[in-house]
Image 1 (cartoon, rainbow, N blue to C red):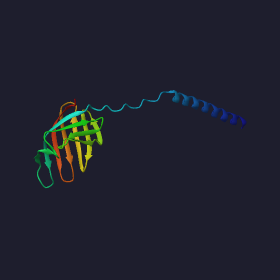
Image 2 (image 1 turned 135 degrees about the vertical axis):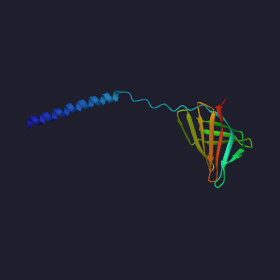
Image 3 (image 1 turned 90 degrees about the horizontal axis):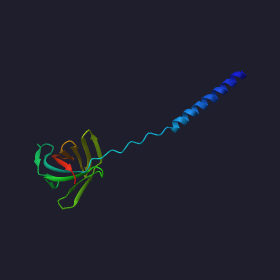
Image 4 (image 1 turned 90 degrees about the vertical axis):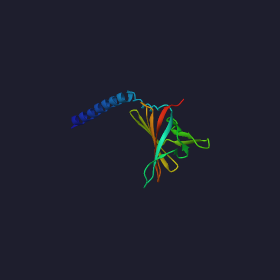
Length: 151
């Protein structure tokens, strides 16, 4: 019995020493670097040139404005600052916050809400085309245009 107790105690000491050595090796290994923040595209200067507005119970018709903005309408999309901005009819800036921004391959999608209207902008880095969709409880507006890097 005494030998069994010595053997058990020796086993515990050896296992503990080996575990401590393994723990020390794990602690000495450098931690993985945190992932780099995503690279945001440069700001876009977009011009929306045509639009269609749809209302329930009616057919879609060409639109001459985006809300209060006459077409063609210029929109600044600033990904890093998470905003889209236009100049309103009164000459003052109108800024809408980008609530969600995601990308897949060369496609960038920005989404937001402005007042009671939700909006979404789709742009690609391999061509200059852009689409903009706005929707509320009584209309859907789809607009089409082009973007270039803002200067």
